[in-house]
Length: 305
Image (spheres, rainbow, N blue to C red):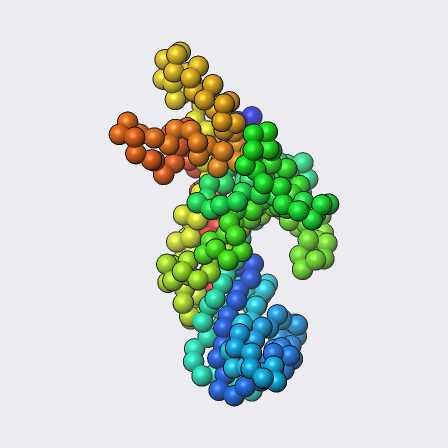
């Protein structure tokens, strides 16, 4: 697969995976306010972490707290466990810490830092991501509104964050040009194209991620199926020498505005019926982008905690 076919070559990028953030729930034997738990974590980790009381009682106290970890703590099980062990000395736990949500990211960082190529890779990821989610959209910070991609003529903009799924869904996806971290600008040599998936609720149970201990030695390549990439089958290949079929394919795609420029979901209305009139999971007009899928699978395989 060359640059002409895809817009940018994957070979120009180093691909890595990480946990962007991890939400852990703890249950304590004695009640406390969230700011006291937060302060204890700050003294232990040196960072101010997000803490939420899940069972708030009179006096703003509770015994069940959700903690969010980023960076090193989210990606080093041993250090995270040590931090929680120290926390449990101050606030004894009633049960083992559980996982309530996790966001796993794959980064494509250009080997020479090319900004145009990184934007091109962002667009390639956005225009080829295939996910069984809803409300494909891009958030426009200029208007503080979502731009939905459900109408003919809508087009992806790699400068904007592409999102699939709702905040409360078991699975949700994002693809964007990452230039900041924790609302702080990153050095230009750290700018990269990022694709990430968030798992919560039933999604965690599906992959056997219930307790914090489940993350230790977890094979992250099990999540490769959540990073699926597709591209249109060339009309000539699909028509297989039938010029009438070739014309019909081109007209059908144009009629439904089925194009990667709007996203893979734009193909949901073409090629979904088989000869028995049953609905296919994927359009016949699509095929796997094996180059992207193998890159992400390899990065996930290398991710260990």
